[in-house]
Image (cartoon, rainbow, N blue to C red):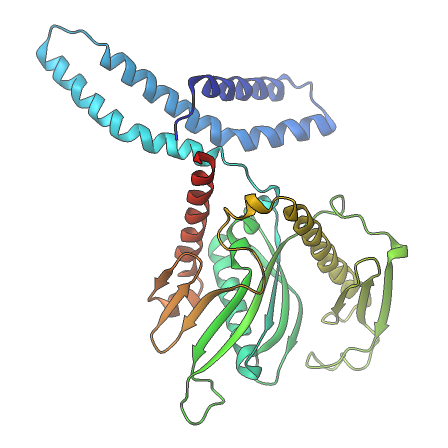
Length: 356
């Protein structure tokens, strides 16, 4: 995909303008915040654009070089060959940098994992997935805070919700949403038979209070006594919180903290993320054609990945990628290869859609 010289000049001019405005010292408040954000978004594009401009200029000057020295002409011809080989990749990188970005990509995310079909084995697999994401997050330098968990007696998770904070969390984790299937011999199986179980993963961008404004009149808040594993305090204090958002009928329960106030704050955090995702889904509904270019549909009911223990493989069905590195992937570090492949496929499909 070739970007015109006029477009490259526009990028350079806009970047220079933002640099000058930020250096002037005259911007304050919202104006400074907006200019800083625009500068940060444009900087990687401007950097690659400048490289493309430099390579095109060098190529043009070498192709028009008229030097009587045969050695100099030979060197120039070698350089022309090199530039012609490298320029298409630089232009491709620029096209990728110019692709429209999801505004939510820079946000932290709410990670929700729920056991599906398979009973206790599904809950154990849900716990395995949670630990996989926790370790992957640590590799990325992100911070994971568990919001709520509903555990079973075997140490599995019927449901777990966590906040993942750091740079570019949603951008990297958004393609994890969907049904994850596991094929293995459960610890509860005495006959050695392979069972298939599943867990559902949802990754929601976390909004700010400005993005989603919730009015008190729209909430029904119930306080009750917590139940289940969690320590001696659980059944002795009315600390659990259930919040119902009346307009949408969304319900969030949080009972992990000793403090009623902390449980309410965490429940509101989850509710805000779910409402924000609902808003995004409604907006995407009007952009159905654009969403077809994405990797997968983003539907949480879509089966996206299979973890096959007997064969030691993990297959992502959306991009037909199979990696025989199951232990490394579940340990966290190996997941990076899968995530990077999904991001590359998404970029490729969106570039193809632009070319079309």
